[in-house]
Amino acid sequence: MKLNYRDKVILGVLLALVLLIAGFFLLIKPKNEDIKTDKAALAELQKQRDEVDSKIAEIPGIKDDITKSYNEASALADDFVDYNSIFNARKVDQYMQKFAEENEVKVSTLAAGDIGTGTLDYYYFTPSFVGEDMISQADINGSQQQIIADEKAESAALSERTAETALQAQYTINVSGEKENIWNYMKAIEEQKETIIINSVGLTDIEIKEREDAAPTNEEEEKVPTAQFTITLYSVYEMDAPNLEMAE
Image 1 (cartoon, rainbow, N blue to C red):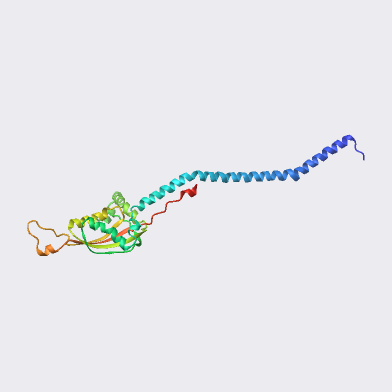
Image 2 (cartoon, rainbow, N blue to C red):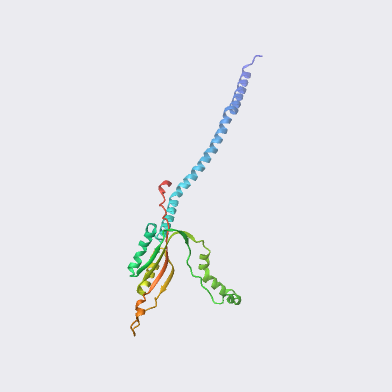
């Protein structure tokens, strides 16, 4: 069959449409799907980048928090005896000698121990109230019981805390001297800034003093005030300074 010009034009248009449709399905549609996939991947990557940028923006604040925490920990460590000063018995003895020398007491015997670990208990005072059970029975409005609870709040909170572990060295010493010097020795240990605790004190002939109206007897002259102390020195390992350059 011979096609005229008009039929040829129509057939050409139809062929062009078929090619366009085929090209769409064979080439354009897959590419379009790839574009959609790439856009989704790009959006996810952008989201991840935003999260990274947000974390990077937080780094200065985090570094400040780390520095603050380190400084606070270092300040707390300053309250303890330096480890290098008491890491063995000889060092403990050397460290404690100054208290006896400065307060002019004579050391008769002493025993120092190497440093070890132990618990550091909380020291607190628990107030007591006479007839507390009777108060609770009579206090129908609860006002007195609330007062008692408020007075005991601090000791109650501390009693519930877990005792922490710390390095510690034991030191037992017997000293003799004037009563005032022994008091000063005890006071000097109490008031120094490091964590040193007097666990027990034993006093002998500490009440003896010369009478103004009579000369002391030979027996009194021979008696010299003495004291026995059991002392614990506490230490901690100091925290290394954080390497904040790694966060850059």
